[in-house]
Structure formats: structure tokens, C-alpha cells
Length: 119
DNA sequence: TCAAAGGCGCCAA
DNA sequence: CTTGGCGCCTTTG
Image 1 (cartoon, rainbow, N blue to C red):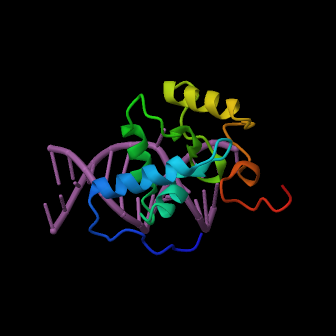
Image 2 (cartoon, rainbow, N blue to C red):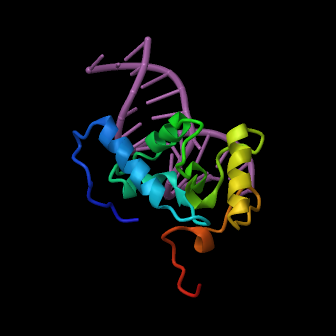
């Protein structure tokens, strides 16, 4: 996507950036997914995709944030199915009506802000 | 300041 | 499809 102007100042504290990411995350509707990079851009962090990924791993176990709706670019699930988090992710996504094939989901259908022109 | 690393992303072969 | 390579942003030693 085009380079979105930072919603946050470069000097924003980690708390502010985290809050921004959490806020965007909380807006992800069930059955929809976004990539790390998209989430980073939407939160005003630019290309901090990796940073977002690390933030995900840092989330508390009992968090209410839909971390499972944050996946890798192109609809890929980077978390291994054998991993507890990966298993949980697939379980939740399937529960929300997503079809996971070859560790991938159809971004055109389940992408939060994708071209859902024909529904 | 330099180097290494992380639930990443994109391009070339 | 799988590899290999480089870029990106941030944190840590």
C-alpha cells in the first residue's frame, strides 16, 4: 500500500506505539485478518512489521486482543501449526469461518481492507 | 557506534 | 513452489 503518513510522531514512546497497535487490533472484525505490515502501517508505525510481530509475541496470555487475526503478508500463517500459538491461531480463525489451505487464507475474502467488490 | 536478532516483506532465481 | 538475499524498524548487548 502507499506509504501512509505516520499517525504518531517518530518520538512517540513505546507505550504510545503499543497503544496504537492495540487500538487497530481491537478494530479488526471477526472473520477478517490483516498482515503484520498492514497493521504496522495502519497504526502509524510505517514499515515496522517485524516490530509488530515481536509485539504479538509479547502479548499476555489472557489478552482479549485478536492477535490470531494478525498474519504474515499474502495471507500466510507464519506461526507453525505445531506451535501452541499456531494451533490456537488456526483454531480461532477456523472458528470465525475462515478456510485455511496450505497455511494460507484468502486475503481477497478475509482481508480486512481488501477489494471485497463483489462480496 | 557496531553487531545481532526478531511470529516480517518484497524481489530475483 | 522453494531458496537466497536485502531492506525495514526496534531492542538489546
